[in-house]
Length: 170
Image (cartoon, rainbow, N blue to C red; front, top):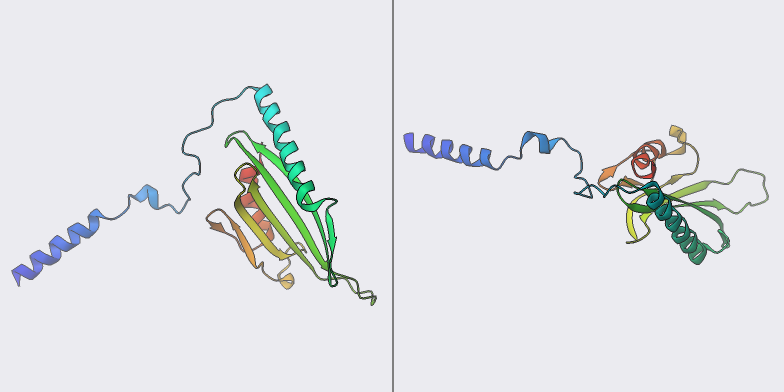
């Protein structure tokens, strides 16, 4: 009996050694960039912001030309925005695509789907996406099919917009 008790005590102590530190278990994702970006002058930030704008504009024109596409049953319109985040030293490309059913002539409002994707323009890494109803989130509109930004998942367009602010703020 004493041997069993000693064995269980030893096993308990060994398992406790593998537990993560309390502050690491807060649920927050690890920062993507471990080292802070170098402090840049206003002129450097402006120059990088202008480069970011040019890269994103060129990418959008290459992928979407005039920003619209039609198929037999859908009409898609696209727009983009760019954000240079000086803290992360990253140029973000936010692509927004609205898909709606082509009007059937009966006067009803077409059902719409909104897709938003956030990319790092330099690495083409997808940081996050929202795919769901184009309407602004009443419960009757339904939940999104996809809603995440890095390791964080969200349940509505509004939640996605809140998560997005971290990346597109100046």
